[in-house]
Each structure stands twice: as structure tokens, then as C-alpha cells.
Length: 78
Image: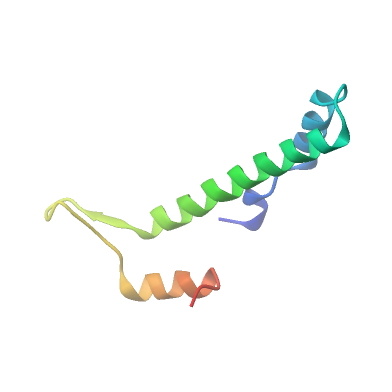
């Protein structure tokens, strides 16, 4: 996943701003922040789920320890 996949694009920010045109700037800012937070959160969940593998023969989920350590370093979690 690329960083750009976790950041709202400018056109979407303008759409939210236009939707709040009759409101004040703070309402638009809060809406942008909420949507951006949700987008980042979902991207984070997807990254974690992508690191989990399923072994159908054992009917089990597992994480490769080396791959997991690599992901933790990539995410700057140590």
C-alpha cells in the first residue's frame, strides 16, 4: 500500500467543503478530519490483515514471524 492510498485527495476535500458551504469552516474541517481518520484507520486494518495468512489444511491463521517483524519495522513499531 502506498502512502497516497491513505490520504484524502483534494477534490474530496473540496466536495466536503462545498457540502458545508452554508455552515461554518469548523464544521467542514471536522468532516474532513473524520473522513481522513476513517480512511487511515481502514488502510491500517488492511495492512495488518494482509500480513495474516490462512492455512486451509490446518484450518488455522498464522503470521510469519520474520514477515511480521519486517512489517513492524516498516510501520515504525518496535
